[in-house]
Image (cartoon, rainbow, N blue to C red; front, side, top):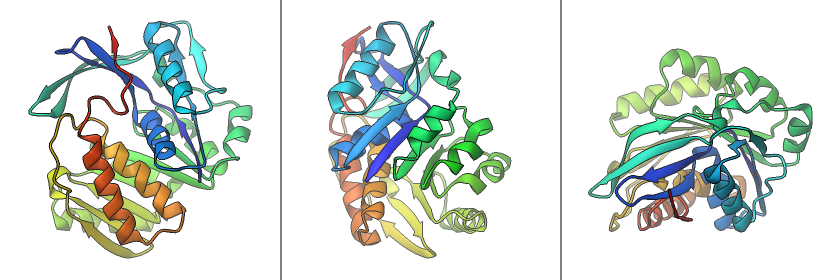
Length: 268
């Protein structure tokens, strides 16, 4: 499987540590998918020309991603400020920068056609280009996080093949209603992760459930992206859905054992 992340990136500043870590949903998923065994991975996004943007790009190069189509803008990168409460990450502020200003070119879209999966998110600001992105994709995966309302979902879901939601407060009825709605738009895979309550997957009309894997939590940041990355890899590679779901839960648990989404701390 070849996967490209398109859109958001960020440097997560851990205020209690004085360290920042590369991240962002459209960054984390291809990085982790490559670690889990994907054939190739790439990232297309807008980075600042400051120290944070340069560090994020260097981390991706070290991980083996193709970053040849990243855009370097003459401004600061995007940052978030993070604190940890018993290992649970809490965002306490943000500094918006280059990452929300990506404009895809025709050359970018042609490049994207060479990948099996394109992954983006609600934080990428690509809604106006989503139809073009979909037309260039074999499989378009989209992380809705926990911040989309019904109007946004209806506007976006028709362009999406794989949909991901954070739903720690959702009950079974809420999840079933979400599955039915996304299926009505043609979504073939829909995952709801619920933290310690496990995850529920709908794939090709069947529902699968997975308990959370017990672990010693250091930092929950990036756990959801680890789950998504392993799930995409397993499903696209033809794995049995329940087995893939279990392996994805184990990867999410392992991601809680270290700081940052995939490492690379640097003082800020």
